[in-house]
Image (cartoon, rainbow, N blue to C red; front, side):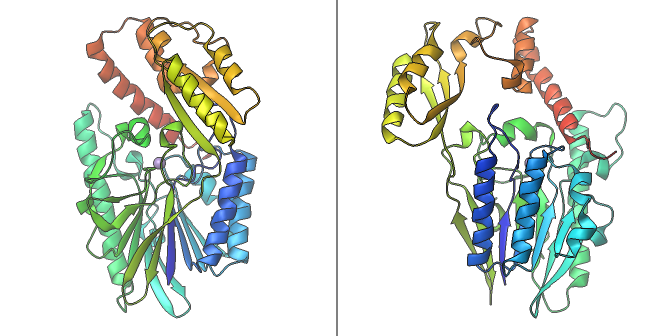
Length: 403
Ligand SMILES: [Mn+2]
């Protein structure tokens, strides 16, 4: 039996104002082809299928076409999809009953343990999948007025580990012939190899509990995690992994080799990583004017279609930076998606370039500007930023589709 583990597709994700449907479409074709050529029996997608709780029609179309293609034209017997923190549980679950006919199993809510634990058969073999979606604080426990952030986090960690324990017990009860058990999850699990600066951590983890790798029962042969975008094992364990996102979700991820995990259950489980091709070159260029010019010229020589983010950090103020850059990249396949300037940022709250708009700033940058505007003391900034992050996360998690 062969299983493919992937996560964090974020279909519909834009880079600044640039839409990426071509890339998503090429990736989904690659994925459908891989499922077929690798003779995958079960496909596991551990959350964050879509980038927002209200995906566009185009994003939805890509997703359903993919599901149809795999269900219709491959050896794949089952697809198991769980919701991540970016997904709308009600949007994912709306077609649940009809998708069941195609052996596509959607778990986005934690109604009861029974619906999270699936016993799937492939030919004459069986396997148990504990399809645990992203666990929201409000789904797990009642909040208590006046509790501190630390209190809240401690209780959440306890509730998450209790949930995984009940799922494990239920799975063990279902076991008849020592069938393998796989758990899925979408969360931040503390281990040694998680790197700071993987993008996700700073953006979303602020208000997510950091559970330890010990919450997973020994009965799990493999834990298929989603949420972090860098492929990695957790706590040095071969069988507890983040598959990582298939596309670079920001310029910070441009250098990473993206991959999926393939599990082959014969006598014992074999784990391999399969690299995903890059469908669009992204490049982050940083430095003073000289460095930026040099790197852009080198990139132009390569002649590849490349999307670029430029970060100017020279000392002197260059008023016509974007004109200089436009001149260098003239007649090339380079597109500049954004020019950031550290130099200006700290000097003024005015627009850093003429066409900078609120749309191009992310919500955190707007808040930073606000803190500067009101001359907030440095000592207060971190606390305020943490609270702000929590508010933003709660808004992102609000299920706009539910009603
Ligand atoms: Mn996530």
